[in-house]
Length: 405
Ligand code: HAM
Image (cartoon, rainbow, N blue to C red):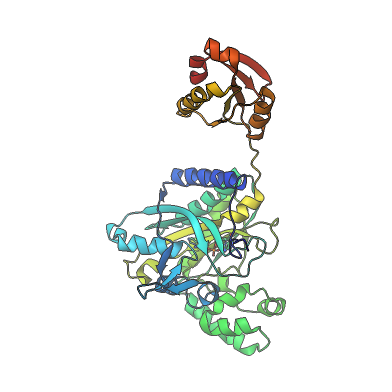
């Protein structure tokens, strides 16, 4: 039986791969304008890294890790997300000791053993950014604006939801109140009962309708913020409003990863069905220290590339040249010319002699803008026949003109 790709893993073939590349190129260019630099951590890391950062209580670590023991007996894991690896690298290369601001962007495969469905895969791609060393809430705003600029550049429609999930100064008090509320409500789902003991604020984004009804009465996170969290959250809203950014405050937005503090945000699309988050991120001021580095404030986000590709249209234009001949004896010349022309342009070369009609059909199939053919006359005169397949114009050119054209 033919071997197929694993469940939840997809090939990215043309024309989808064109969209993928176009997205990565545009997103990278925008991130670079915001002074983010490219980083590429490994796909495989020690399992401990994710357990300690993403958190044992998260679904990602609890249920979805591609974890195994390698031949050296090491407990390793394919990265389920990008932040943990970037933080590990940041600390390992002692950038935390340099001080100052360090900004990185990355893209590539992430792996989560989830139940595959529309927009949810076991291998998927993220484009992410992580900024270290800047505690100012202007950085949170800049990061949100950067994500927005990327999405806007592809005309993607979304809702931006923001929240503040507090910090070690205020979150513990809130958690206590929430736990005492949850203890009084025996009819919450089994998952929430478990979350009550591991990471109680995660109950707030439970998908169960009964739970959601119950949590209408739960203590409100935003009413428990300390002065610093409150000040930053208010300032963030002011900055976004001043930049004419529309947003909603979603006080149940707590994110599925345990490392967040203060700002949390998501971009949601109404065009995607159940898996509607196209990007998510927030601040994680304690993670660098928690993983053994010097205390360093940090903030970032990741965009789910597959979900974006579902939303964007890129019209493919005719591009480049198609080069062929009607004579077997001209193929050497055609091959040599192709190599020269390829130094400056995209060119498809046909190695078989064919009729003009067959060449034009093939040039059309390959989406070439120009069909360039050498027939008997052209071979004798040292010229080439060129047809612009878009403008429907044709002419003869010398070989030199063709190479310079
Ligand atoms: P996340 O919310 O887990 O955050 O993932 C970010 C985005 O990746 C989601 O909004 C979604 O578009 C996409 N995504 C997640 N899981 C899947 C899946 N199974 N299939 C397809 N797409 C998926 C993080 O990963 C954080 N590291 C983001 C971050 C960076 N926070 C701070 N810095």
